[in-house]
Image: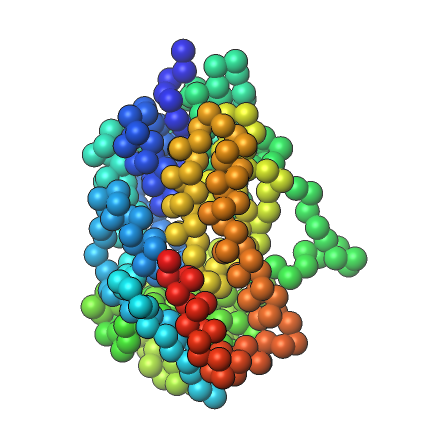
Length: 344
């Protein structure tokens, strides 16, 4: 007999959300996670209203700073839109992780230390990291080991010179100062985007998205107003993540489901990662016995994100990049529609 109904590989926010959802449906759950204690990650730390709504549906309500909209900014001007519905929230990733971990434990999910260095399908389910289960939810991030081990990772694409093409990366650092806005500010420098997210009464997170080699220092040199606000206030290390673009050939293989970043990721540009990951977690648990149904649910949950983010990234990485903000300023209704789509 398997040790558990559901083995969740990866104890980050999406993995813990999957564990919570499975426990709420009465399933036994083991979370396999090699890192002890609170887990941090380089990310923008802004929860869109839709992500916050999903969390609250699981009785998870982490403290943070209200986010009432989004502002696209450059030295030449800005365009703002405030959410028409409830606000989102800026939440330190460590605070979010602790809240989800506490809720999962309160519901009876068991976390064990270890890695899924081997994944083996059996007549009764699957074995990974020494744990047998009827189902495995791979929530182990951008560089998913499970995705590779079960044959769901496509062959790498390379340019003719042998280097990966168009890969983008993320960096994040915190600044100890009072937030000056309740908006998520997206500052457009010539080569990168800089996200400013208030996450507490005296703490602001600053994240950068850009090509390999991009640095916060170089990006801020092109954004003098923002650089002046942040001058001398940084605290803590710079954390990095990437490359951000990841693909999978399918999202289901027998008793295995890829969930969250492990299932494929476009870019962090639109800030929808957690909302989409939480929706995938719910869909994966609801379709444990039907791989085809999960594929359909995954495509439905990610369709708008994939289309919108791919289009924006293509624009932002093309020679047309300088026109993006002027177009948004000339078309406030279009910008508002995009922001409301992200907020949903």
